[in-house]
Length: 246
Image 1 (cartoon, rainbow, N blue to C red):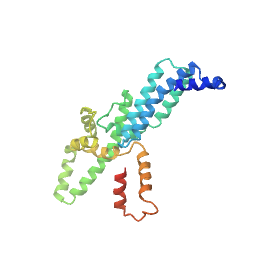
Image 2: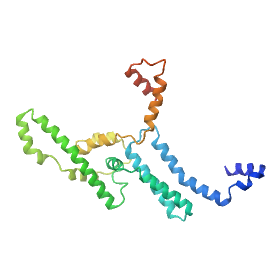
Image 3: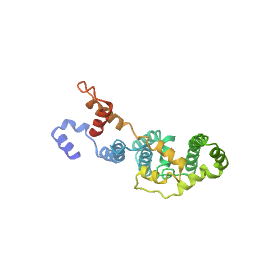
């Protein structure tokens, strides 16, 4: 790009006073190196592979680590200010929902939780959420056993001994080795009987989409399927056509 601009300025000397100096080109190169991974992250989160909310946290932490490496080097004040502002904005997107989703992702688990304090805080958040899911499961089980009076009284006696504690389930889940290249649904389908509460939570949290881009694409496709001319399509047929076009 610089070679083309050099030729342009050489032909139009009146642009010389506005042209970038060598120091400016160096800063521009650094800015490109800083922003390239952000472009890659945008492509990942906007792709058609349906990234989930756990992918968001991994991508953001990767970007933060990338920016921190630049700060460790000797950067100019304006470049350092740029990096710090980007970092602050990225950290706004790390919420509690991404925390739990990342823990429930067997490819990540605790990878993005660096400090011990952050790890403990995350486990506490997961435990508190698990209590809600655990209570719902127990209430559902009791309502089913009430249909059989004998099973109902038996369940009251065996409930405490047969149900593993929440902490125990988390500990067993964390000790299972991280698998980098796996299908999330297949993994949880395989381990759903080992981690009953966590598997239920995973079905909720891991289904959250990482961005609204795919929803916007679906609306765009729908606009081309359901038009003023073809406005009497049955819902089933419209969904099938949208699926073929997506």
